[in-house]
Every structure is written in C-alpha cells, then in structure tokens.
Length: 138
Length: 129
Image (cartoon, rainbow over all chains, first blue to last red; front, top):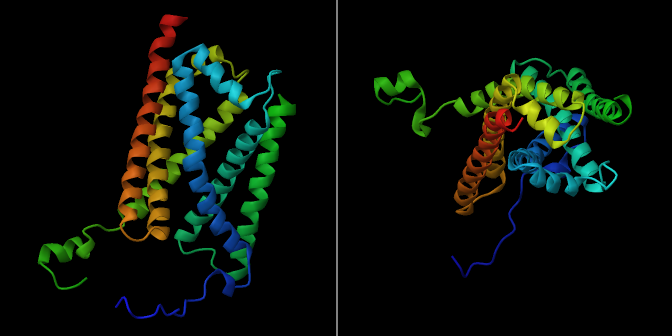
C-alpha cells in the first residue's frame, strides 16, 4: 500500500463547474452567517450578559472594548454590530426561504432565483433601516 | 425499510437508530428563533439607553427575563445543530469526534453562563434598586 505512488483521482465537479447564480450565494451565505453568528454572536452575547451580571465595573470593561471615549461605537463595535445584525437579517430571510422550500414549493427556476435575490435585498435594506433607526431615528 | 424485526419496521429508523429528529428540531427551533430574536432585536433597538442601570432594569422584568432565557435555549440548541452539520461536512477522520465534543462543551458552557447571568440579574436587581 505505502509503496504505491499517490494517484490523483478524478473529483466530482464542485464549485468551479457551475455558472454562478444567486441561489448558490444565498445557500453559502446561510451557512456562513449561521456559523458566524453561532461563534462571534454567541461570544459577544454571553460576554454582554455576564458583564451585565458582574456589575457596573465589569460592564464598563465590555462597553470600553466596543466604544470610543465619547460614547459612540469604535471600529470593532461597528464591524461586529453591523456584521452580526446583517448576518441575522440574511440568515432569517434565507431561513424563511428554506422553510418554504421544505414544503416543496418555490423550486421553479425563476421563482427560486427571485426569492434568493429577495433575501439579499431584504437583509441589506433591513440592516440599513436598523442602523438608521439606532443612529439617526432615535 | 429493510427486513428487520417487526418493531424495527414500525419504528422505521434503520441502522442509524434515529430518524429526522435533527432536521425537525432545527425547524422547530427556527420558528422559536424567528419570534424570539425578532423580539430581542426590536426591544434592544427601542431601549432608551445602553448603560448598566437601564439594561439590568430591563432584564429584571418578568417579561424580559423569561423570553430572554427561552431565546438562549432555542438559539443555542439551533446553533448546536447547525454547527454539527458544518463539522460533519468538512471534518473527516478522528478529529471530527474532538470537534463535536468541543461543540457540545462550547454550547453547554456558553448556555450555562448566559442563563445564570440572566437569572442573576433578574433576581438581584430588586435588592440593588
């Protein structure tokens, strides 16, 4: 076994074999946003809760990590805040798309493509609306 | 469904000893997440401030502490199922077992800290105020 040379074996066509479409991007984003929120979102969420439970001094340490001295968010705060909120809206929209697809509906090519594009449009608009409300609307 | 014992044929689970519960629980918790996280996002956005006093007073409310604890249960179970699929898709060989054990530990430890923090805030805010 060990003496045999390693032969490159033919692989089944994967990502490079297909013409890209929005359904592929949305499927990949569903996993990426879900896994991203599961790791980054969970760590920040649990840190936030534990810091709150720890008292004012502990919570000040959490706040300082993500804000400038004036009170606004710093770069890290914006990256994580906008990133996690966009990931939530995208994962929610493509999750609803998956629940519809689970019923066997929405597999017609044009419907499927339109629904996939709609989840992307929704997540971008919802993220803009969310942050516009936080920063300007309140 | 094979030709196993009559009971095995009725259960219809096959040699894996389990059926669609992973898929189904992911859908159930997706529904829970949809309601609970939307409530959380809207509530957080509408809070008057994000200082320690405002947030602990908010969490100490009956109507916040309970849905927040339910959110932790639903979301953490959901991401535990989702990350399991990612590990199973990309990790082959013996390392997969280590990743799954690590995932369970991460989920349980993070969930325990989150739930304890929520209840700690909820039960102590009355005394502090």
